[in-house]
Each structure stands twice: as structure tokens, then as C-alpha cells.
Image 1 (cartoon, helix red, strand yellow):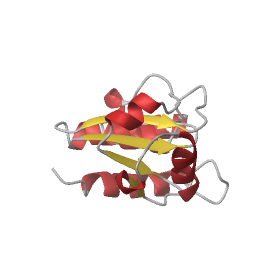
Image 2 (cartoon, helix red, strand yellow; image 1 turned 60 degrees about the vertical axis):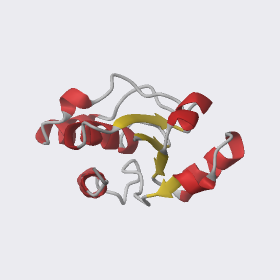
Image 3 (cartoon, rainbow, N blue to C red; image 1 turned 180 degrees about the vertical axis):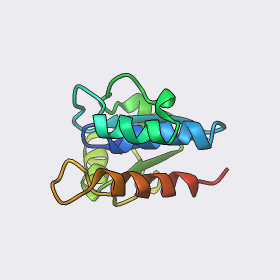
Amino acid sequence: MRVLYICTGNSFRSPSAEALTRKYHPEIEVESAGTHATYYIASDAKKLLEEENAVIYVKPSPDTVSQRAVDEADLIFVFEERHKIFLLNNFDVSSEKILNWEIEDPIKPNVHPKDAFSRIKKKVKELPQ
């Protein structure tokens, strides 16, 4: 199975999910990207992944979503409805393979990075093996 995680900047949520998937589900092929990728992986994400002994799995820099990544994915996990809408409006993709985890961006002042990370970790651990 191949999984693609999509968030906005590919700086916290999706690279955290990718790294945690690599740690907990090495049998799953995984990639992450952003709808509007930033230039760096968030330091909060790296710190939390370090605490989880998963920082070795984090990618060096963010990527922007591509048709290739969408095509190769069996499942696409997004973190907000707007990510799903972006994919449907900009790529040739079936809505059936897009699942929304509804985890808010910790860049927002009312969202604590550790809370978002814990929710991501829980979702990743629940993935079928």
C-alpha cells in the first residue's frame, strides 16, 4: 500500500505523519507534500519526532504535491477539507481515495503543536497493517 499525506505547507502535519508511518508501519510506502509547501520542516515537528525516536525518518525539506504523487497513492490523507477541495480542483484524482483526518494546523495560535502531533500519532497507529 502507498499512502500520501497532504497538508498546507508540508512543514508539520504531513511530514510528521510520514515520519511516524515510516517508524510504525515500515511495510507502507509513504510520501508527504503540501498544497503550498514552505521552505523548512517546522522545528516543533522535529522536536516532537525526536521525542518519539522518529526524527531519523523526517524528510530534509518540504515538497509541493504533484500529479505523480497523487497517481501513485492508494490512499491520500488530508488534514482539512480545503486540502481535499484543492486536490479535486487541481488534480485528476478520485474523491474516494481521499480521507480527511481533520487535524488543525499548529501554526494557528489556538492549536498546540503537541496536541496536533498526538492526534496525528494516534491516526497513524490506527492504520491497517
